[in-house]
Image: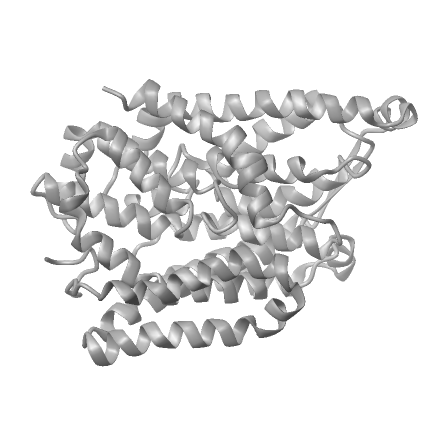
Length: 430
């Protein structure tokens, strides 16, 4: 069986080789809560140790070193995109004065969801998280962070290939650019509208608990000012680079140049006003290096046994793609299930004409895989790249964030999960 990676044969790994990946996931979930200082200090060693087990296995046991080379290439591309957006957005300072009322917060989240489709969930998250904190500075709580991640960092970007990494990979393979918007706008409205509705009632209760002096005085002091405008040009350059497919590496070079240009052209006062440091991106870089280095056996084992999974309906593709996207990076998970669906249809993932034919004849399956990867990516901190980066940035600002389990138990299951099931019933139950 051929893998979805050109020139790389899919060799089924031993099931035990998924253990390094499981250990990595457990470490991400547990260690910051159990012993944060130890985890922060020894994270590079943990990543090196677990990653080397997988690399050595693929190179010397499976004789499939190209698989690890491809994983390294994916990681570099991913981090160049995330890192460049992090640096460029860090050079834009949106000064906000005054406390926001619930309706203004909801409007802000709507704008953030739409912006995610224009500059990506990573770009929108990096650009808007600081003003989001500032406009709620007197009453910023865990649910403000989590709903920002739900909407701006994930669900909002489900309408264009620029919006979320899985959809971008589908576009590179041959899915028409406007296919997602044309076919997924109704589920997008249900998810984003549902999340904002729940947020409004939670935020209204939070607002009414604030002292009267804040509600009456601070909400009347709304003031917005933007500095570092040159970085909007660099954001445009990064977004334009997303459309470049060849030659290999040129896209990443343009993004890196945008980051370098932003770093040197942004006045130091703007970085200081944003409390900007490189620590969050370093932490996320190590975490995702561990994920990319160890997740290959899990993905390959899944693809090798795809035929035995009984994926014979849109709802199963939606729930299975989503379930793994919640704990794996959702981009390779999207590709794994897209390869499975196309294989079941006797089509080739590496043929753009087959991709276009699949997008016409299997609309439901492609919708299910696309939305499953995007919506479930919000379920945990590790489901999508911006989630951990936002968490790290907020912690850098000395703001307490919900733990991994608190995120899932207090917010994902009671808020996100019912909407996920509602969408499954409304759009994929036939």
